[in-house]
Length: 365
Figure 1 (cartoon, rainbow, N blue to C red):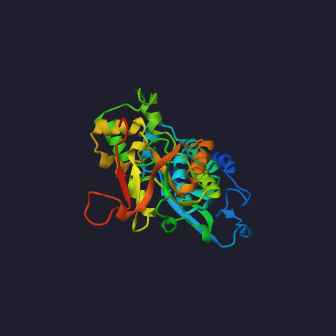
Figure 2: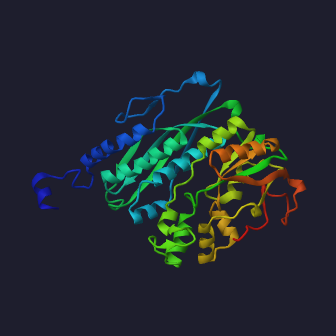
Figure 3: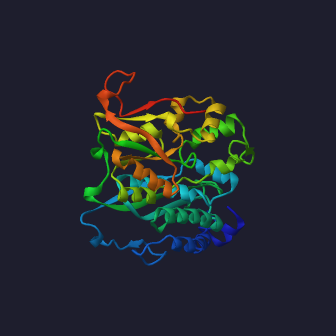
């Protein structure tokens, strides 16, 4: 017990929680929260709950969609580099691009930030990124919570998570039931690792290869840290535009589990998505991890997105229109494969064909 505590009694601040710093953090983040808004938002920050006026006359039979996620160990890179203004973009991407897969329009997001000690400037940086992500996704940042956990987390530690809410017409929900033989599978290119596989990436590049985060990497044209902190591409608006202009059967957000693992979730029994690796070359960060860690292709494909961040399954007759739309929106996209009946696909496995079949080899990988 300190002399001060003996004289004046224990305080919350002495126990490690600084309410004044929390109040300052709220003031610093208000401009960023105000930037990420929509007309339906009522009031501002500071209340016990965020208010969002859902205009039901816009929908005939609205279905509310919700998703919760975090950023994972990519945060360790941000903490090592003391750069905290991009992982918030990753957070929004992980939440809202899961949400849009069912066809839902993102409405609002709420974040949760747990810290060892509230550092107002850092909280503001984190919320700046979340705000930018919400702007990219077209949703409002409705509020959130910052929790100080002294004794549980050390001073520089933090973790972030968030929940997003959206809405979709009941008869417009996308899913496996819409997929048909002959549909075309389109790939929407990723901006890099996005926010999955960082435990393996860090183990290979930092522990095994002992590459410094500040070191320039010729294949990247920038430092390793810059590459690893590249924000996750947010596809929400692009997917909604695609849904509005073409016959989209279903979407799949390529996150943990990789391309096959996630696309399998939206391909129905009896059908198989046949994907050709020869249609694209994964970006250099993937080949570097594979080479430096001697990581098998199967492990790479199970862990990372391998350059494909989102998949759209569309009616064959809308392929060209879909690709033209995505190109106009500056989203790299290409034909990845097609959907076939399982019985028409030759695979070297016993029993029925899997819902996703990968063929071919990546060029120069």
